[in-house]
Length: 250
Image (cartoon, rainbow, N blue to C red):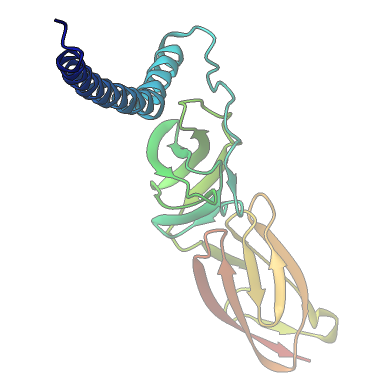
């Protein structure tokens, strides 16, 4: 005879075991799915925030290095400008030069057509240099070089004479110790010779020598002894002094 109760009990046990197994498998599947999603997100973030930016940087680095279309700086810098023109002559062995050029560019100094020095302009373009001069004539010019190696045009050539010798002075008339007589000779001619274009102070009067060094003036003599003091200054500011004495009698 068939026992339905026994069959039902066996069926329930099998159903319960199957249900537990299904739940366990479902839980494992959910855990695996979560793990896959988590690692997928991590890989995606790594790709977006690390790998992609570095690949882009690498790409542009290669393009910048190898591309024939990269534009190079071929524009020459501005010509250096001196704040003031150098003196034409000086007794000093050095000359302080200041000026302006393209910021951070190099300024090359040429003395008598040879490179004398190289200085760098600051971020504001200013530069300064103490130039050493040779005895006699010095020809100075400058040009600039920017960071890309482009050279500017040269400045004009400045002529600077280094002269440390005192100027010569010869008083031709009147002679030292001479006596001048008669009222008609009271205004006497004073003339002499020195360096070309030198300045002569005679007592309180300024005279200028011509291109040959000659100078002259008329001077009104006081009765008795007259002291004539000459101070000659050349272009390099060297000086020579001399005093002569002339007597006037009516």
